Image (tube, rainbow, N blue to C red; front, side, top):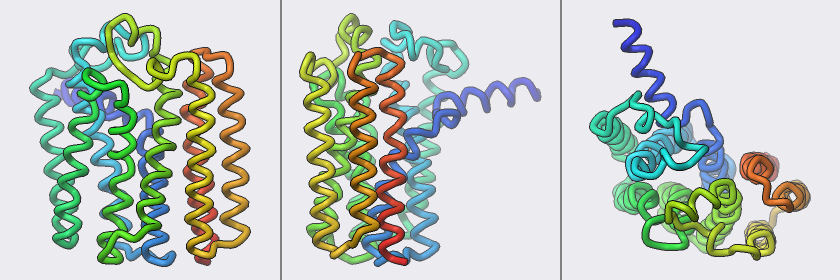
Length: 287
């Protein structure tokens, strides 16, 4: 009995990537950017808990539906060949049930918010559920992922301010482009496998121009975030955070320069620090 429970917990941990929290960080930091700016630096405890738990739950749900969508191809990719649905640690039916549990929990959280935010949450659900299937139909699945990872920011502004101001859309655009940049690095890890099995990605689309396009996206992200700072009259702490991020982006360019799998993956993971540094700059501005 204990062994079965232990095995079930292991399957849940692996399919939700609890042992690999980078996705949660990359979703959480931008959400905090929006929460702090929309609330002038003082988000109430209820909203902080709802959006923090919502990030964890929706990221977990996204991982589950991603593995369901990729069940036919994960076994052919080196990085994913031991995932629970491939190894038999979890069945497809169990995965669907787990996805339903997460969506139910997310619904319970969002029902504590205002009706406009509840309506916006439907878009978040559609984006999260559809992203894993986009790599079959479009060369731009990273754009859908970027929208999914950024929609919580729109919801935060709508909930706190009762509107979605220009600053919210600038943050949305910055985070969407940043997501495309770092997820292209991630896709560069699997590019050879993806080409063999017919999966699409921006890493394949960009081809030999991948590093330059990623660099352009990173510069655009910095420009959008700088514009946000100007509109909000932020001072040197925020500007310093962007300068540090420029250095971090430069380091990521060095990591991906050889297009080696391990270094591209390292560059992807490194983006956690970018999100955190921007948040620190915003946090200090409101002290």
